[in-house]
Image 1 (cartoon, rainbow, N blue to C red):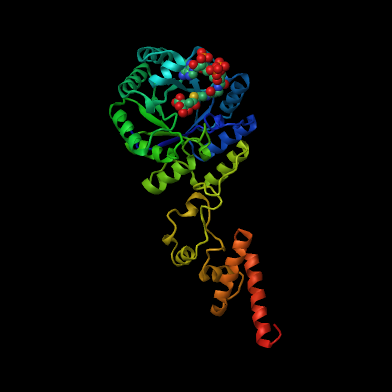
Image 2: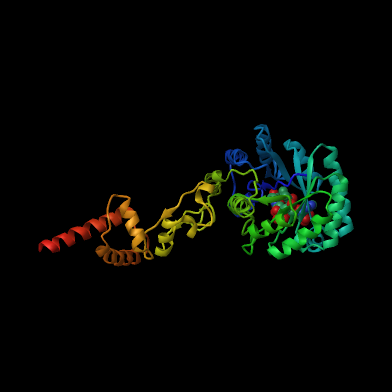
Length: 383
Ligand SMILES: CC(=O)SCCNC(=O)CCNC(=O)[C@H](O)C(C)(C)COP(=O)(O)OP(=O)(O)OC[C@H]1O[C@@H](n2cnc3c(N)ncnc32)[C@H](O)[C@@H]1OP(=O)(O)O
Ligand SMILES: O=C(O)CCC(=O)C(=O)O
């Protein structure tokens, strides 16, 4: 068994469940193309039981012949299963709640009833030629023994994988690691972990699950998904590369364009601080940081921006130091006279505070030129 980790994308299923998000057919197909081009191995393309339009979209995606596995999310009902058959999708995530809370409240089922349903529905899907994964909704609040029985039953019925979902986002990296370690030790099939970001822990939990033995992780571009969303593809892929030196097969340089494409289709903006793809995450203003970076980028750069298709940006603002100002001026062929540096810094701080923003290189050069000519004027007695 290879040790490769698979990042399976569900932007087009759980991502689209984010409030107010509705992709057009063209957007779904283009995003699927971009995900495949970026090296994503599996795409959860939709929920066939939503109706004829969704089925047609899935059909169109299947017809593209992308080099990925396309899978569809289904409840464990005949209605959902028949819709999946109609869509022509080759793989299904057959989902059933695992926690007693959800089993009882939503379905009026007990654990034994759930196991019978899994056996029946997985058997049916296998007999119809599907690749089958079983989704355990609310696995994080499920009884551990029941989860182990679900995995065993799903495997016996022919499923290739079981997905453990932290549906309501209540795990932390420690509890995730403990849960997945225990289940992976006895699991005859691959495990996948599906995180939610309600406590801002989706990426951390996903890394913990992988460290504990999950070979697959569910991710979405920008972490788009129900409520606070899922684990972000770009964060998990970059963290796997940087922290674990693992090759997930994802082209990290494709991530910024992918994020921009999904943000536009979802009508969502990308926060400037969004790891990997946000506008400011490789920008530096503080004087001490810029002075350090210019001596050796490793001083204040844990992640090489080039690795993820980005570049470093030096910003002049309230917290700049003389080195940064001299650096930006030197890029337009100007030498900062040390006598002028303190006066320029004072002006820069005042201006940045006044406009509550950074100062562009053009503004800085203009300020420098004006200050130089004022100084010359004063020397000549005309200032
Ligand atoms: C955690 C997750 O992300 S789960 C995935 C969530 N995704 C979606 O909800 C996709 C979009 N949903 C839809 O289009 C619709 O809700 C549909 C087509 C799936 C169902 O529509 P409706 O028939 O109108 O049902 P409605 O949405 O009102 O209620 C959901 C039903 O699914 C049932 N259900 C939920 N999960 C499961 C399951 N895993 N297996 C079987 N039944 C389930 C609920 O008990 C409820 O049944 P009830 O009406 O008998 O109480
Ligand atoms: O069914 C699954 O595998 C996961 C469903 C889901 O999105 C969730 O529980 O958060």
